[in-house]
Image 1 (cartoon, rainbow, N blue to C red):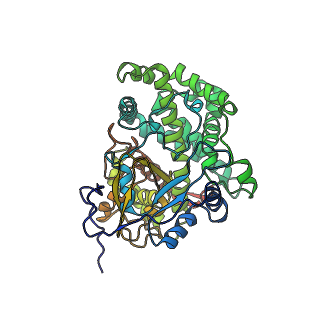
Image 2 (image 1 turned 45 degrees about the vertical axis):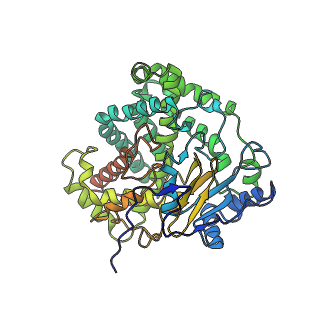
Image 3 (image 1 turned 120 degrees about the vertical axis):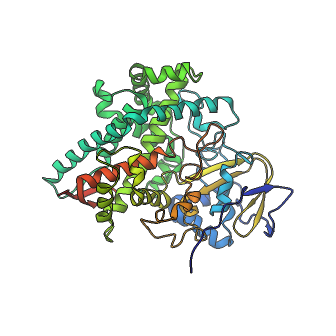
Length: 480
């Protein structure tokens, strides 16, 4: 039987007064449980007894619905001002409502109802915490998109030169060892490459930043995210020491101040554009630039690229031979962001890994008004102020949209599969959409997958085969 995904309707939601045609209106199943006790029970399931993916799967099965009420961490007892109550939306159609700015708002919901101290971002709400209805959101978003546009001229050359340095070091390690961990070398490569292209500041001019800048970002990121992410250490130690309280900024204030002063001194050209062309103060430009650089770019790639390498390095179907062939025959003699667009299989592999392992697993939105939300089979009333939560890892395994949704299919988005980009939501919106100042779609929606494709293409121009996993390389065979 041929498969065709359902075409997206002009609007995936309808006014609360007009439920979708032919869909029964149901009460949202599930509950938040007894006060305090219910949130603790769900928190333990989420972090300990079930883990996130099973947490959502079991509730889908229990409620026979991809829309349901539950609690998500963090929660009581030490997060007294955080409301863990959410409406989970775990299919493509219901999840799509999170990007309709007429229906929902995105103010201060990056991590749900929890937000780290503003001290982590210079005592100001940077653009990621702002709703498009706020005037400064447009200023920051346009500044960010301008940074990406202007950096495109050196993007590929800086990537390739720094990637080659990382590969040389891995080869040197492998000459004396049976495996080489690449996680810290990858982060060092990312930090140097991204800092130079996005901020215009070369880390090599400051030895402290060049050697330890990526670790400064690691620590800054970790303390903000620890209350919300499972780590995998021995329980109940993880619950007691990592998920029970928000961490104070002073623990990483030295790291952040070092990065701030480095950008202020060596990224003046970019910072001045933020002031003169986009109406930001110097402090606003630097803090927003640091967030984009550290949280979005460095943090996102640090999570995503190991998944991409793992998918390729562990494949046993002959994929690497096909990738090498495409990388060497397409795209011309010099790789660029444009030339990798002519590599459909490589791009499809990148999209497929983004589908299976999106770098940001949870997306949130708060109802701007009362409206009717629809899944594939039912409609549900949502009340103004309620928080919606989508677990992307299951959303993009929706069996009504993706054939064999649990399988890694390298060519899923090639050979006519581009229509499925309408349902690839890794970037806070569909891959077929456009990032603008009036929405919350990631400004790097296009350059992120192209960068990943460029990395894959360069690796397979350099190597015939790569063996390893999500943390280590065990063999690299140079191209003949």
